[in-house]
Length: 450
Ligand code: GLY
Ligand code: MN
Ligand code: MN
Image (cartoon, rainbow, N blue to C red; front, side):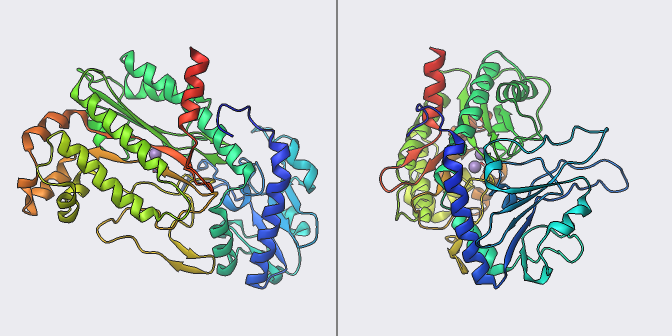
């Protein structure tokens, strides 16, 4: 199935997803030696010396079971062999909008208990608390039910979560479609000369989400700002002249994230546009490398060589890609990892996990920001996000380290005003060819607009 197929009915996929979650929970409990899995959704957090709360962020272990991302003070309870229970907090409150009564396709599968006060959950949690594996943050403690986060259970669940169920893939495809709507609106706003803030607003309006719902803060950088990897300043005025635009922005759907980056040149006949095109073509080849049995670390190192090949072709470096990699010069131009696992969290868990019982696969030396060191398996979704940047701080280090001769500095000066390039898609590893989740969503949107 690809993004041009009709969206599947989540209800049809959810039952199997839940069955998988229950099987995994049974095994996690067997490993940790507990009788019940108990997962609080999390609580509100308050700003110090103030009565304002921080935006609520649901416990990912809770939303792994339920498409409920705005339901603090609620609980999921799983006991092997029993129907799972949801303790659903729906307060009486005339200050705020309270959560709707439970509704939708997930409700058929649970015993649901409504509570009006957080402490009412206590009577609905399994006893004794010592027999419960409770996965959550310390603030979720209720009576004796204090999150204990048993490591064998967490290691197992996080490792298993790397391989997505068909339900999860469907949610992630929808998160792609939503983000793509924003990306297309953002490009139009850039072409119309809007500021970073204006582009950000156009993005949010098109997606229908703002900071409270987006999976991470939008990165919207014009000109040199594209060189700041996590630039989130959002200038209110557009620079003059406009040269380039990098946008790294996603969307959330039922708790699942997308994470997409595109880079544009204002002058589409420019050399910078040609460099974008070269990175884009290389990125698509890298995406095809997402196959079962492939070591992600190798994809990352191969990406360095491919990107340095582009810089050589454009006359920015004077040495071979291999030499640039060996001396650390390539790190100055591509100073982050090729990508990361993604799913319920934009930087999803278990990227370094050696097994479901623990162990950590180290990063290759000289690559301190790589977030994924595992061998790919069917069902994993990873980002592929190569980039090339012109970052003064890192280029100064190249000079200090005695490698100034590896770089044509006049060419660096020519590209510096554009900041940098990043292209990022999500890719599903299958039994066969890579399944790029992002590109079909762009193609679908383009076809619909034609
Ligand atoms: N948006 C953050 C990242 O690409 O990892
Ligand atoms: Mn990103
Ligand atoms: Mn990413």
